[in-house]
Length: 127
Image (cartoon, rainbow, N blue to C red):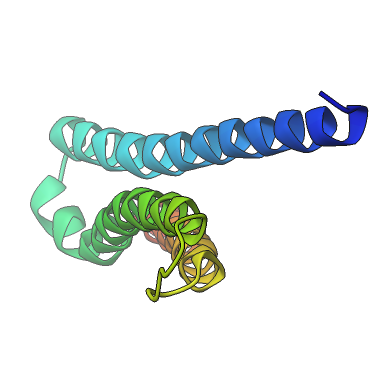
């Protein structure tokens, strides 16, 4: 195996591994935020009033978790399309189409986490 071919293969493998870890991180931060907020609401006095104000942050974290899961699915579709592109006569969507959707969805998951976190801090700072 030539160095250039070996280098491409190892780079591809590392890109996949990095992507998987990024998807896991999106799931972790959004899921943990939900658990932490619900745990906090279960312990704080005046939780009924605070719970209503925490609806938006919780929805943002749930949306982030959902988007992270969808990003896993579109990542699979990216790899499936990439594999199929090596099959003669393939006429489906190119893998780059799925790749950009995956990137956008994953970025949206991160944005929803950030918005949820800021809104949670704003609610808790005025509580």
